[in-house]
Length: 124
Length: 482
Image (tube, rainbow over all chains, first blue to last red; front, top):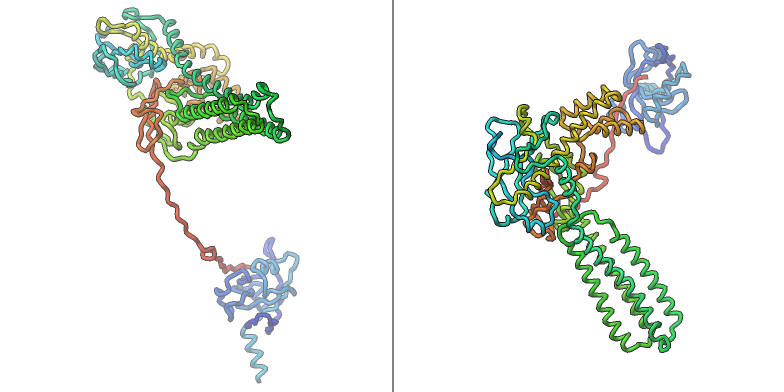
């Protein structure tokens, strides 16, 4: 997922559909995010490129809606319901995921294993 | 009943008497006394010498310790009839009043004022005279002078107006203090103005009046030059009298001799007497009021009669005792007045019991415990209460005045604001301040010791800090669970 400035970002993504779980007043998705354009990218343990300021999944709670939907730890979220997540601040990302009016979020996530899998399938 | 001669109060002259009077009445007496052996409450240590026939030098005053007045409610204020020079209560009141209203030194002050006023008037009228005299005296021979002269008349008129306003603003102020010596700069300026005007008149008289100069424009220009020069002298006066002492050069440490309360004030290049004035003006608003009751160390209720004021005059024969005892009694009378007020205040309290019973009693008890009772009479408390209610102040605001000692200005001016101070200094009081100088300001009850310290020469150096070097970005890495 190396990113060349000025060039469009291309990645192999997986579509993940998460149905939010209602807990009392809140709708939770069951994972944690890290990263953002206002954060320090060098501290991100999951990114391949340490200048990548995208939103990453840092933790997936067990049995939560995210795990059921197939989200894995270390995934980079590219889109949420059509909204771009590659150039957003941490708080904007949080807001886009936790909109009270939406009960289902459709994410486009990418991970390194996906890239490799596609490569291998292309080679063979 | 006691064989030793003691008297309470102060054993020096009240400070009202003029210096010239003092020259005549130099014969002060001081008695030797010993401390009372059975530990009676009031410790009055009076240092004494045998009476001498020669005038005593200097402005020293012997210090006596304050009279113990713990038991103000129960003290007797009697002068027993057995003393040689007993006088009645009314006499004491009258004497103290007399001394308060002495008018001795005023003629010196008014002399200075009249001289300055006369000189000012002369100076103001001189240019006008210069311009008016030639037309009056030799109108026919004068050359006509048209527009230029009229322009010069206008300028003279306005400059005189400005001079008038400036002089009014600078000099026509109510004198706020009577200083012992003449103010050197002011005197110098008056002399300068006088010489200046005299020389102008001389020149005018000889070269213009005598020879009947016909060039009127030149005469008017001469008058204009005089007014210009006067304006410059006015500028000099502002700089010398007002501006020079604004920049702080010295730091004055003022320590009250009785309880050691001290403050620091800044002063510029002033003479000692003006520095003393600055100190006193600030003293009244910064120092807490002098409370002699707080200085006492021990309480001895049995010593009521000693705390009272009995005046005995046991001195050698051939002594003009009447004058001195009057002075002593008058000095002691000041103390008496306060004890009288307290007695009245006790009686008045019974009358007003109907008004604010519980508050009044509790407040009085508190005041008595903190030994502030003689600063607040019953009427003043009620007045303050009415004041606070009128302005919708909270109870805490009402009490604030009684909770701690405030500066002297807060209390009844007539009683506590001493208008007579003596400046004790071993240098001439018109000398300028310098580092290490010490002078003392004494009033009846205590003294203020003023030490002058020069503000050190400050060396400020510059250090340039690159703005980029201390800017930083806080980088976070936060994790939010959704």
